[in-house]
Image (cartoon, rainbow, N blue to C red; front, side, top):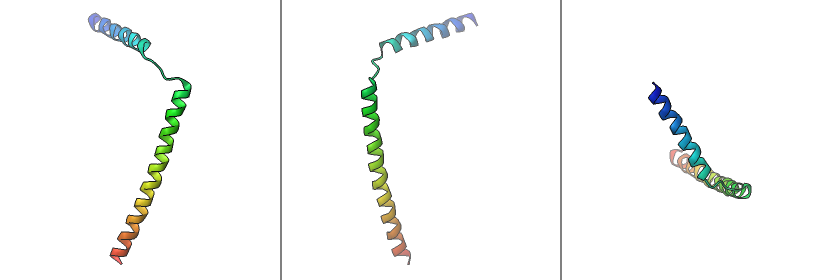
Length: 64
């Protein structure tokens, strides 16, 4: 039991050490990346919506 606790404590020490080495993005970089993602999501949503409407109309024409 004591050995497991020591391993767990060592694990968290190593996690903390690794997190100190991380180069975190600036607020500006984060906002820029988020903006790109949101714009791409909107473009893809619009495209997939058009494909959906097109396929719906195609199936309606075929079945009637």
